[in-house]
Image (cartoon, rainbow, N blue to C red):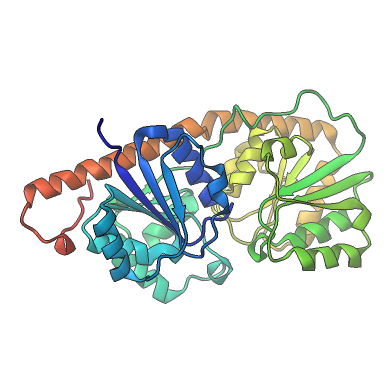
Length: 379
């Protein structure tokens, strides 16, 4: 029996974030086509729980030694057919795999708070140097595509947009109206600084929608200060911290409105899941958030950090059940039409297989060339 091609994945961390869970979804959908080895540089491996037991995948923490040369040795020893790296924090793996002569697919999915407002020039130059000399860089949003071309100076054939997709069969609207009164606003994701949840909490308090509740699902370093803010505002009885959700689809069906208030975002998995679940979405105008909503965007998108505008958006949607129903239906239809998981998985599969085939052609054409001097094909 022919052994499945090996793929080495290098993540800065493998916690349950958007990039990690998107790739787990793709890995699961590709089934036995590939064998996977996943390395998390920070040792956090929680997203591994979502990997199907039928998939050939191992997950491990930080190697004993790191740096480009250490990754070159690791790649040379394990001999993957391709290496996939994710975001700035894994770029040493990108460079190491490049030095080992293995095709590299790097994903740039977004920025942390340290680059949310302004890119670090040293990192920009490093991306320019490395990413034009690998097989392909994948971006998930039009915003990031523009950054990759304008700031990172990536050649057109070196960068590819693969929009995030969502399982529209799993994420579905609830059956019938909620068996309760009032309006439930909700957020699903990390409680991290870049999510700017203080804006959401303050705006929810000021919007004062009658008989309303806010549920924040997820964990993260900001939980203590968010809890303190809720107490300070005197709304502890109306705000619930729901923690990690093992079944996000079931959680979303509890909501009437999905809200997010990030200061930086590219394509939010949670936003797409909420849209597929038939929910209206209130968000800030960052990344591709407005693009995802399409015709539903007017009145639902506020400038980042604009508390009065965000408060008004929550108030208007909270007091208008007919508008909530109309926007939720439009969001569901748009997600099914434009952002299916099947399309995303097929594009990744084609890209990975193309990288492997292109590298075989290079090896056949240059059989005596040392691996450390070989350039991958950009085809």
